[in-house]
Length: 545
Image 1 (cartoon, rainbow, N blue to C red):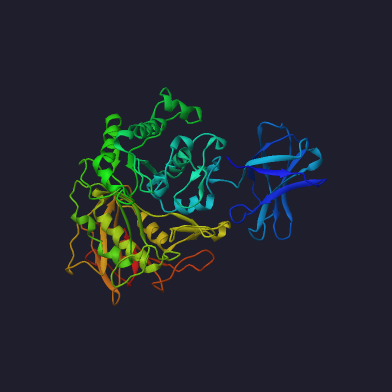
Image 2 (image 1 turned 45 degrees about the vertical axis):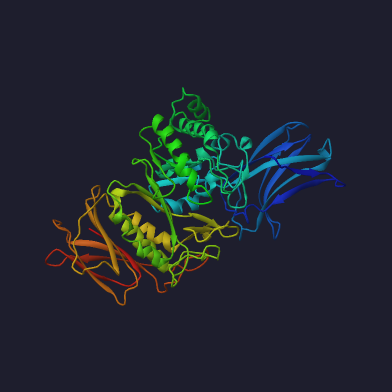
């Protein structure tokens, strides 16, 4: 990394060093921690690495590493720590000390210091177990990466350079990110693919397309090298080990190619001065180049409503109010049957108001809240009614560290204490809808005229043989009676799961109570084979045979 920490002897004559409190705290448990650090400088002696309480200075674990460095070279030292007990809080530090008497030139330089608890699937440079488990419980189907705004680049020349995100961490370049902090690229292209592999997710690869968030755009005459870079990235991911970039991937320990079925060109190119050139030449140039070499890849526009190739898919982002989502229940009904759309970013971000608009630039709620989550459910059910047209949908953003953040609300909130990881009200809604998968829709008839305040979709899961009815009730004046009859079904009992809350404005947050009430009970079919039940206002439900 370009910056390093210099620790000088000064007037000290004994142990010297430094301590770091991690990312707003360090959780200490009786489990194995692995880490490393780089040192430059002559030193004869041991380095002592320890986990300590910042408050009481109690030491939870210690490791000693013999120095083997010299004045010119950076040398990596690896260590393991195994605390015997948990710390009472996360106000802890990682300390590295050494004996100043062993210094040859008065100081040492330190760089790239890491500490990892056990990671999901024991991946080196991996992900926090509790966060990935919260995501895995949703049983999602895809991961769109690296963004979002992160793929665009805040300004020239800091676009997302995939080849600078692979290989050893010490060789990865950092850059200013779109979200006001320095992006270390610690989670790089391979880490994203491992993430997909570990959770069985379809990778949706977003690529940089010559447009920065600063309104800067690459001219048509200068665009080809960036298109070539995208083709190189695809070869790195999907090429055999005897291709130039496939061999690079294999040399990093991944000889088996990955499969990429979806590539999105840019992100929200209708914003920040990108639309005119996106329509004029940028999208078409990328589309033609990718389809020429990879004809089976579905190439996506980063927006909707653009005149483009008929075979191109689109990406519809929607941040709105609860009422705004309900008003779009039938949005995809109007789309032609040939339409293929990804909803890469979906979230309620602003309360209902007379103009039903979002006040961009004003503070958004810190956490999803129940009426907003029900509004999202109505929209998602509307999507599922049009599933042949829909590639997928995802809440955005997924994660937020509540101690330092740039955007709210998010689906999952966390801090350094894994017991604080909070699954939002929207997380509960998405889990219910996602874990009761419909493989194909069933035609429906109903007796009450217009849809609303009950919104629904019905379908079947061919793998399980289950019939499934999903519904949301939004702003009814009383409980809504429901009778569901699955034509041809002989099922006598179905399980009904109802999500509700006592307060439409209630939120789940780290350390707070669970505000989503889950009621699961069986429903017995009547003499005509129909299932009868009622749903309260602001509820989301699934009936499954």
